[in-house]
Amino acid sequence: MTSRPRPTTRFAPAPTGRLHLGHLANAIYVWGFARRLGGRVLLRIEDHDRQRCRPEYEAALLDDLDRLRLAADEPSTNELRAGPSTYRQSDNGPAYTAALDQLATVADVYACDCSRSTFAAWREAHGRPWSGPGCPGGCLERGLTARRDLALRVALGDDDEAWDDLLMGARSGPVSPEGDLPVRDRNGNWTYAVCVVLDDIRHGVDLVVRGEDLVDATPAQIRLARLFGRETAPVFAHHPLVRRPDGSKLSKAEGATAIGELLDAGRSAEELFGEAAFRVGLVEAPHPRSLDEALQLLR
Ligand SMILES: [Zn+2]
Image (cartoon, rainbow, N blue to C red):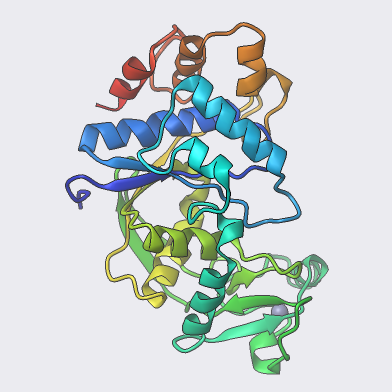
């Protein structure tokens, strides 16, 4: 499978912290694939988790993108600064509510009162973690009344989805690896899966370029998109992550890796592009590179 000519992809950070070298590596892949395929890049603010996201982090990431001259085709950073946007998840609650209502007509959507300790107790009793459809509490069969303080799950099935990854080749996996997919958490937040799948449909995204930590989540997202009415799944490209020396994922900007702080300290954008490309194995040494040079590494 190859992507359609002139695909639409997206750079979609969550404002839970500062932009870091991992985001920059993702940006090189996103803008690099777009340039290679003659496509366009959308900028999306993934702030579906209202407890973890903060407006000051969004402001900082927009400033960081401007300083790096990473401009999306749509929207501009100033459009996002100006107010509500279709490209900011917290501004689009009604779209997710409507989608969930539609989803409930084609799949089992149900309230679940299982907590982390419910899953832990099941693991303790059975010597392995819960896997496959359902949940340890049998909540679908119990038919709990939906409440704001209960999570919602959707039953996606007991089978697999497969895709041809632009970077990883032929892949497949179960749609319900760790139970039925959560669609809303017990704090009332729409989940990552619901937001990204629906946004990619709403915005016409047909090329998803993201870190390989999301490979295992992909089968469920392909299935969910189909239930939302999407006939053709997006093309996926899962790239290596920037990791710490011990191999763990770089998830939050920690002092030395926050883009804004590195620029403030006098590092150039070229040095940061070079280091990000090096950290994901696109080049053999962390030499400074212009944005254009970094994007050509994807050719
Ligand atoms: Zn449950």
